[in-house]
Image (cartoon, rainbow over all chains, first blue to last red; front, side):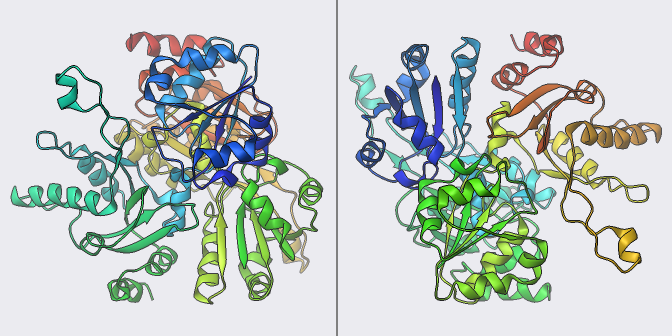
Length: 284
Length: 284
């Protein structure tokens, strides 16, 4: 049996009781570590599970998935995923392969940023499509998020922005010299995301368009959601440019049309309470 | 301390280890039981937690929340919620009140239908806004879901339909006779939801419009997501009209534009595999 087990967003104790029982009876335990980050050292998990954990990096999961799948025909194998097992396309791909090869499998769900984001106060059913913000480089500044946000704005919907993670990325200079060297991991901050968002909206304005969001747009930045030192700060994009969110992972939400309960909840995280006064008053 | 604890979607073992530790040290334990249903008898929870559980119905949560909040100033109190604590507006409202009154609180996240829906194979970042389908009555047939689905369709996005739950609804006839009698609980089935969806799209067609979905639209019906007897059936809306999903809770997803991986995964749940053949071929 192959168990796909969501670990949730916090530390070793955010696994479910069902998940814990499953992992404890597994012969091999793999941990996917490149689409998200674990909020606690791997050793803490090993201690609670009483199991040795093998880290599965991008190469293992995407190119050598058989290594994991093959074991599951006869033995119990666990594939651990930060958040929920259906959070990333690559996990769905592995579940599909298990299904196609007739390998018995079981999915144990958990919280992920896609539902835990509700903690900022903006109600989940008022979100449109989520968008990904990738690190801009000198030569590559993909701004497809803008059109998706524009679409959400048109429907009065909130936009969850998932911020880029670069883990175990091969260094291009080294690669050209025929060597495999990995860059240190990078996690986009809320500040960087807002900077990139505003670069794109400024460009729209310079081109004569009225951008769908700007420095005055209400938003919430979130860091380490579901962890004990979680931080939520709300304000205008301008205010979030310089707010300090601390360690990764960060997420960002642009607010669409808000109900009074959403405004009240969001306002409770304000970096500058004055920002929300007119919004609150217009609803009273 | 007031603990808002998500129970996830399955039985008593779907609480997280953190949630279990918290509830075990609480003096009073409330369980919200009207925005969703618990997949297991309350007694199973009580046994695992080693605690007596008080059921909090709509009246308690919406009108007498102070009863729950007041205890949390001095004692540890747990408020248990099926799914995630931020799944329903009414929970957010209670969290906001705790915050405003300076009651220390802690949120323990878990899976909810909003992220576990990924199990049908349609990727979470390709969903638009979710829609609610309410039971039609003789005189009240609210179809605001149609415009929301139409909006999602325009963006090529999937639509999660949350199906109506009627628990502890006062019986209107009895009410007019001055008595309080509650109707038996009702949970909308996928079949009923599809029937209502098609009633509305047929009406659009009769009025000369081209509806944004019809009998041929690809969809997935899901029942008891995250439970051991979970059922996922995909096909056209017409095919889902008569598919048997068994006991509640049910959910429905209308597919937007799909990537090949999404089609492959969805096809693996087909009531009629032939339905997916042209879709799969057009992507190969």
